[in-house]
Every structure is written in C-alpha cells, then in structure tokens.
Amino acid sequence: MLSGFGITQFIIKNLAKSENLTAIALIPARAGSKRVPGKNIRQLGGHPLMAYTIAAAIQSQIFAAVVVSTDSEEIAEIARYYGAEVPFLRSPAYAGDNSPDIEWIVEILQKLKSSDRFYDCFSILRPTSPFRQPETIQRAWQEFRSQPDLVDSLRAVEKCQQHPGKMWVMQGNLMKPLLTNNDSPVPWHSTPYQALPEVYVQNASLEIAWCRVALAGRTIAGDTVMPFLTQGYEGVDINDAKDWWYVEYLLQQGAVRLPVVSQLPIEAKE
Image 1 (spheres, helix red, strand yellow):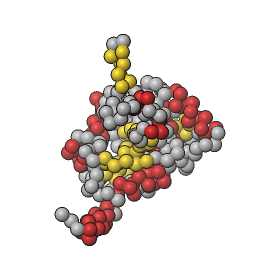
Image 2 (cartoon, one colour):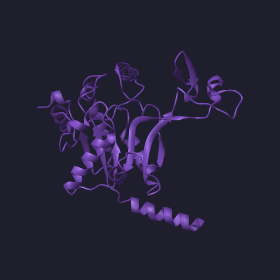
Image 3 (cartoon, one colour):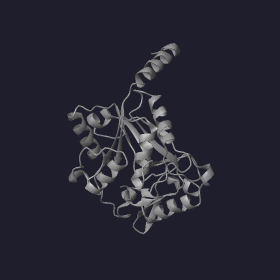
Image 4 (cartoon, helix red, strand yellow):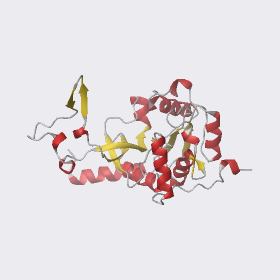
C-alpha cells in the first residue's frame, strides 16, 4: 500500500505524464433528426447550430483535431467552412435513430488510426448544447487530467429537477414507485424534495474518455466515471421544438451567450 508520500509522488508523476496527452474532439451531426428536422445546421443567432460547438472546441486549444462525424455531404461542407475536419462520412449503418454512440466513435478512431493518427483521449461535444463555452471544455479537461489513469471517463451532469424518488412504474391499473426507501418509514414519493438525497442527471454538454476505453472495451464510459458539474446554462440541450423555443428565448432575454464564431455566416461567404 502506498504511503502518503507515495500517493503524492504517484499523483505528481501522472500529472507530469498528462501534460503530453493528445485529445480529439468528436462532434456528432447526423442528418436524420426527427423532432427538430435539420437541427444541427438550423440557424441560431446567425449561424448553423453546430458552428458554436466547433468554435468552442477550436478556441479551447485543447484538441489536436476537431472532427465532425456526419452522414451528410451538406453538413460536412458546413462543418469544414467553420473549421472542423470531416475526413470521411459516417457509415449509414451507424447513422440510424437507434445507433449507439460507440459504433460511430470506434469507426472514426479506427479509421484515423489506420492513417497513423493516434490520440490518447476523445471528447464528445454535441451540437445541441450551444451554450458550452471554450472555458467549459477547459475546466472539464483540467478536472479529467487531474485524475490520469484513475478514471475511464468524465461525464457532464447537473442536479436533477425531477427526482427519481417521485417517479412511478405502471403495472396494469396500478402503479408502484420506481425507487423504494426501506431505511425510512416515510417513502420517498411522500418526502419533500429538499429532504431527498441529491441526485444528478447527465446532460449533453460533454464527455471525455480514453481512446483505449472505446477501442478495447467497446464502451464510451468504461467502469469508472467521474462527474463534471456544469454551471448555469452550460448543459442546456436541444431535443425538441420546445427546447429550441427556450434557447431562443434565453438569447432574446440576454440570459446566455453563444461562443464567438469568427467566420462570416455561411450564406454570406463569398
């Protein structure tokens, strides 16, 4: 067992190793959105939605490459205009509504590896979180890097507003609590929210993991996952028309800011 001094030296040694880590940003932007058609390239604040994620990734100055994974030539052209790479289109087999992330991630990492492009870590940055800033990514990277070799991945989370202790499962004409609390005479569904244990829910802001976790383990999370607590509106995620309305409302009210995009709007380019 390591002594206190040994643990300190272990951390210092691994922090030193982490200074040379290489990371790739992976931005998924397939064409088949159903609830908000074309949302990845829909205009928000003068630019296609995904432009803000590309800008934040590049301006964070963390990544050796910023790559968009898409099955659409139109999306690929827009992604390249805003500074991302699209070295190839995503295979149709990995672009369906129910395709898990691990499929397109392994595909892109393996194809890049076959071209002698190797990275230690990857970060998933979804275009549907437009208020994630370069500073958000930098903060997450520093937290992940402070635990080298001790965790498989980092995932953005926020305190949940709909507590699972107050959720129910339907069973015919009856329902039963999703969760039970045998340690208290008062069930969670009848307990004030403030008295319930704190529970966090993942959001779409970002994920960071070792490439080995995906390539060898066929998982994007691994077994040991550390939390990254988003602040304010960093974790806002656009999934449907109501979310899009909310994002536009926040912008109109001046409650949020989008990452700065240096390019002219794509329709204004010469």
